[in-house]
Amino acid sequence: MAKNKRTAFFISDGTGITAGSLGGLLAHFPETEFDQIRIPFTDSIEKVEDAQKRVANAKMMTGSRPIVIMSIGNEILRNELKAVDAYYIDLFDSFIHPLGIELNEPALTRPGVSHSIKTNQYGSRMEAINFALGHDDGMTHTGLNQAQVILVGVSRSGKTPTSIYLAMQFGIKAANYPLIPEDFERGKLPPILEGYLDKIFGLTIKSERLHSLRSERRPDSTYASLSNCRHEIGQAEDLMKKVGIPTADSTSKSVEELSAIIIQFMKN
Amino acid sequence: MAKNKRTAFFISDGTGITAGSLGGLLAHFPETEFDQIRIPFTDSIEKVEDAQKRVANAKMMTGSRPIVIMSIGNEILRNELKAVDAYYIDLFDSFIHPLGIELNEPALTRPGVSHSIKTNQYGSRMEAINFALGHDDGMTHTGLNQAQVILVGVSRSGKTPTSIYLAMQFGIKAANYPLIPEDFERGKLPPILEGYLDKIFGLTIKSERLHSLRSERRPDSTYASLSNCRHEIGQAEDLMKKVGIPTADSTSKSVEELSAIIIQFMKN
Image (tube, rainbow over all chains, first blue to last red):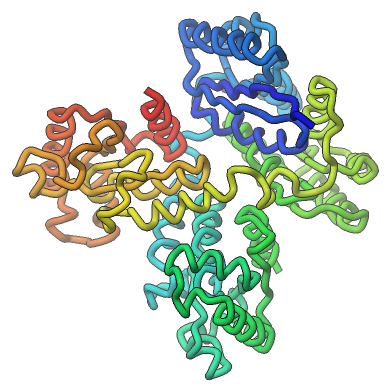
């Protein structure tokens, strides 16, 4: 069956990150194919008019009303934009203004409020990214005591992107440490991790997926061979079970899902 | 003036990422201090009841109705949750269901649709992260032709977190390359970057901020001294201007804002 096609615009007077993040909700409609277009920094009448032309053009090209998810603080610009025929989801009208009534506080309407450098978490998020990069793949042995969580797993099990996501999104300092054959032979975690058991979380992965990921990096190597992947994962899972580390599988879970699980673990 | 205090819950049957991303909207209310609490994976009646207790408790502790931003697909669970007194922003009722009517397609209601590993962009985002990490700080000289954008700037001007954000959020392959005194003496970009001028974007930063960032890494070094920072930045800005590279200042702009500007540049 041919999919329905729609253009989805994310139009904002700032970065468009907040409006764009609602793009995830479009995944609830798998029968519709969305062409997603971001138009940030729409903060003047000229830019609104440019955006209007693109919305009108998309309607002409697809034959369907575009979806417009918009976050524009200035009421005049907001209403002007909506003069073109489209299906509008207006974050100011439907979320921010009603929330302001509940809070008994008028909303700031200047552009770029949501993702400015001045938010409380910004500094700690940047610090956490530096920490994750500095403690990637066991590269630094110092400062593990500062880590809020330490991810372990075999090479290419998803530790690095998960560490970075935890840092970027939540400002969580995540170190990661590889499990290698030497650890399996000893039947213990790497010695450097001793004393940190309560903040260690394990990532595992299906052998076929690991084989495919490692083959991209080193094709036709022993490292990437399916039999070696099976062997390493079996040993890593045995070890993590033996020492009592909670684990999650990166084969079927996105970094967003893994991070949410890890944060739950950190709270317990 | 004492700030108003409110607890803001983000309750989801999935990761809570989509609901949580609306947390940016709370920044529009600077007079209110929000205690933000995420409750992901709320996909059973027991978990809904746990969440209800936490919402009711927050109301009791603060004396004000909590704000609850919720994304729960199951209608029974959704209505059950809302039995507790709070100010609800329900993404399904106010956003997804009306959108489904516009699209003439019923919404998927199973949990975890928005941020599963199955979304189109997931693979390319992970690939872009590997690319950014493999092309950080000029560490790899090969594959620059695959980069969609190359960030340049002096050490600690914000290249790495911006590259990673572009990859993580948008799946954009961003390499980054440091500008060093040798480049300034020659008055040219690093030779390896020749031929890529149309995809090079420069980051700059105020001397005082650079001094502070570098002092964290190497306190009391020449590298971190204010006079050296001033000198390097002056030279880097002259060079970028001379070769005609667009620039943005990371002192006052978040990685979200820098990324939005860089994406605009890439489109031109």
